[in-house]
Length: 154
Image (cartoon, rainbow, N blue to C red; front, side, top):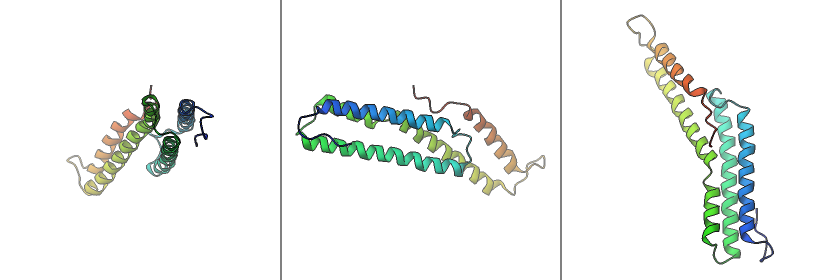
């Protein structure tokens, strides 16, 4: 989104339009993400979705920054309200929530891999494979998290 030339379109309205577009993008991303259960996807599938989601938010941030620099170039200085509005658009709560989900899933996946590699040959006192016991416990703990609506940012 590029600001219009001259003073034909007030920059405050352009910033409000940018804010509205960002809100709409968030709503569309949420609609798409709700069709997937991110916490139930296998990690490789989840990783693919994560890349696409990150790309969307990276592009959004780049476009907002381009808009801000174009607007600053067109006008010597943005007022405080305009600066704060742009900053609030850049601080996207959905993006932050998704980053937390990404970290959680990655950490959980790494923990599973570590347990598989370190406990695969160990046997507990009940002749159960320690790997199976540990993975079952991790899976049970993870099941508590699956039913939480992580995408609710209200």
